Image 1 (cartoon, one colour):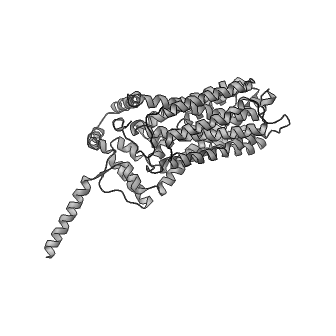
Image 2 (cartoon, rainbow, N blue to C red):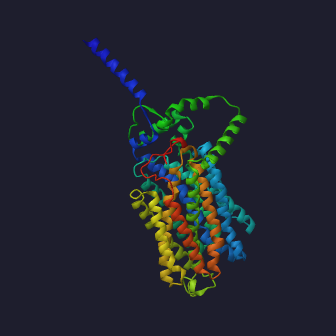
Image 3 (cartoon, rainbow, N blue to C red):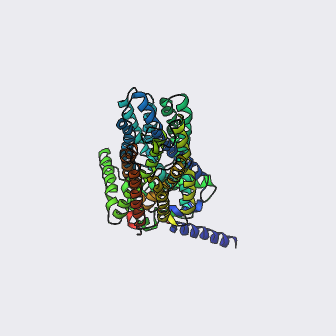
Amino acid sequence: MSVVSSDASLLGNQFRKMENENHVYTLDEALSAMRFGKFQALALVYAGLGWFSEAMEIMILSFVGPAVKSKWKLSSGEESLLTTVVFGGMLVGAYSWGLISDNCGRRKCFLFISIVTSGAGLLSAFSPNYISLVMSRCLVGVGLGGGPVFLSWFLEFVPVSFRGTWMVVFSFFWTAGTIFEASLAWIVMTKLNWRWLLALSSIPSFTVLLFYGLAPESPRYLCMKGRTIDAHRILEKIALLNGAKLPPGMLVSDKATGQNEESVSAQDTIPLSATRKMIRKFKSAFSSFFMLFSPKLIRTTLLLWVLFFANAFSYYGIVLLTSKLSSGQSKCRSTILHSDKSNDNSLYVNVFITSLAEFPGLLLSAIIVDIIGRKFSMAVMFILACVFLLPLAFHQSAILTTVLLFGARMCATGTITVASFYAPEIYPTSMRSTGTGVASSVGRIGGMVCPLVAVALVSGCHQTAAVILFEVVFVVAIAATLLFPFETKGQQLRDNVDVLDS
């Protein structure tokens, strides 16, 4: 009897082993099984720190420009160029980092991004003249263009359930960075000078570099490259840290592509010369870019470009507009938020107050994004932004102007938050960072154009024309948002174009 029972037990174990080997599970199923745990919380902090540092470097533009203009006797055009070159650098950086991330890995990007951003940020504090400051700030912009890589990396670790809510929580780091920078500027600029502000603002980027070694590669990226064994090892470590278990069976990147995993892995194991590897990566980089214009994606790509352009134009426009009105540099008395008796702190006070508007913007996004979806959330907040900004077409009192800018900043924050994670959700893993990076680059064009057009109109006493321009941009953005072919609420992330379901 004992021999029979032991044989039965052995057969049972072999049967269970064969059954597990026949089972497969995707990354989304693994992440759902492990839930949002300690690892995701740590990943949130690390990626959020990169987002935090980018927000600080962007907010510097509100304070350094006026200070340098006064110190070095610059013209208005030279002051605007300090802002424009940052967005120009971000345009180049967003596209470049996206290609590097999708072809060399998310993790390697973190190293280069943090080196460029922190190094150039610190060097800009020691700029001996205007030209060197412009060049160093342009390099900072190149580093800041890597922001979408941090977002894509974190997104690929988050379970499907309530992904929208967690991505809004991630965006809290941007808001915290803007408010922290406004507070830091208030303290530093009134007691020291702009050089100290630039130096202290580079510290978060150095922190990202310091903890780089603790960040693992994205398992989804590894699966996309056919490295499922490496991806499984990382998932095991995540499960251990979260105190959870992986589903039984074998990991595949996607059920629809499970049968292709072996062939991809086999190709990756073929020994290649260094030259062939470089050529292969070069071709892969450009193929991921051209796939953005494939029949299944071209409509989404073009609409996303319009959305990001409108978001950057409106968000940075409102930030710079607040700075322009509060600094008291406008010659139009009726457009100044404060009277001529305002003290020098008016700029810092008003930028700080309007920065607080990002908290209710994030809260509104978190409440509605997983209820009515990404598309309608953005449309609703764009409409509200139109309503808040429209009264500013006519001259209002100082208090009402501040309130209206507060509301407009709140809605602009909400739309740019939802768009920032809607973009990586709609693209497959093989081109997620590339697609998001290119869209972000187009958005930077909006950031470059805004100070040269909308803010310049206000400086030239054409506030009504500037507001009408903002309203037109909002209407175009609403139309683009509603024309997107699909909603991503509750949908799994995809690994390639073939499994995209429109």
